[in-house]
Length: 77
Image (cartoon, rainbow, N blue to C red; front, side):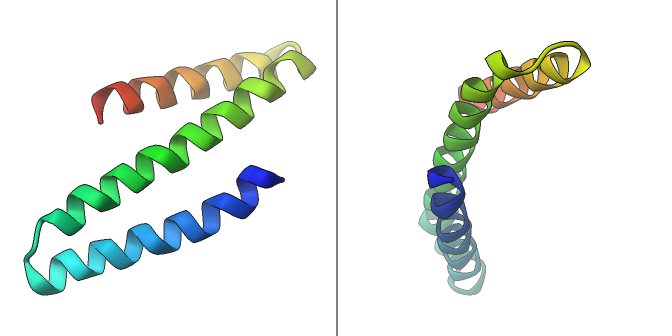
C-alpha cells in the first residue's frame, strides 16, 4: 500500500516535467522525468519481489518475468 500511495504522485510529477520539457524545449525536464520513472519502477519492483514468495506456479513465473523486465529497464536507464 505504501508504494501505491507513492506511485500516483510520482507519475503526476513525471508527467508535469514531461510537459514542461515539451513546451519549453528544455530537455532537462525529460531527464528528470525519466529519473522519476526509474524511481517508480524501482518501487514496483520492490513490491513484486516482496510478493514473489507468496505465489506458486504460473503466477510466480509471471512475477519473475516482470521483475526481470524491471531490472533490465533500470539497468538501461
